[in-house]
Image (cartoon, one colour):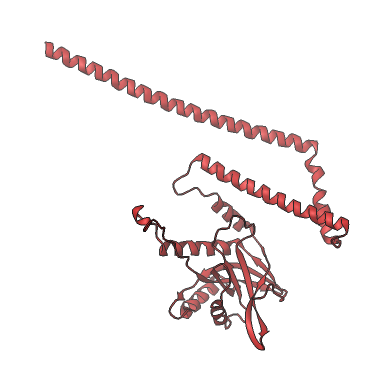
Length: 321
């Protein structure tokens, strides 16, 4: 597999494709490895069983305008493990149905999961060349790596290389950018703020929110550090001067004085005070509600105790009479 592609194509990947692949993998994994019912069966001789990571397959669809390939959506495919091939009638049926709803979208390639492209993937890749003569391969790595900062998604192209005097198709990596529209941004933001299945507590949701903000600030700080080191190296002459990048940095820095203006400080303090006031009011309301519940419980318990004492006294008087 070569390091990078030389086709010159520009790939734009939409978040909906990543969400679809992740959802497909999660559903298949939960079906193949259901949660264990009892804790005693979770271990065998003190060793926890390793869950097998399944591989999923599907097609990616989109449009190609000149040298720009934009991947909008995807759909699932059926894989036959006995023949190590895709269900061709199912693929043709899905393609026909998809063309009726999205007539301008075409099958651009296929997707799967794994840490890296395998030799067996080339068989599936070649099988789709009658639909697209140069299909692309989107690979999602489901393994969680906390140290990784980039998305675990790789796009491969196929190129014909001569190896040991024999022409062979190999996978080559291609760079891509994330492209979103307004509807996708709203959907992704909604998915990111979904509550846990058990409802979750306010502290848990706040911690998740603060963790997301911390990660964003940390990423911003790392990007600024990279840009600073690049500019220092350019100033020292270690890196060749690039005017287009300097114009972008200059445009970014011209926005800073507007943030330091007196009007911005007044607006910021006003919004900050309003937010804190609403937070305090919410805390007071919550405390008042808790105190009201406590008083109601106390009154209920005291009222029951009074009635019980009056009933006992009435029975005692009846017995004496």
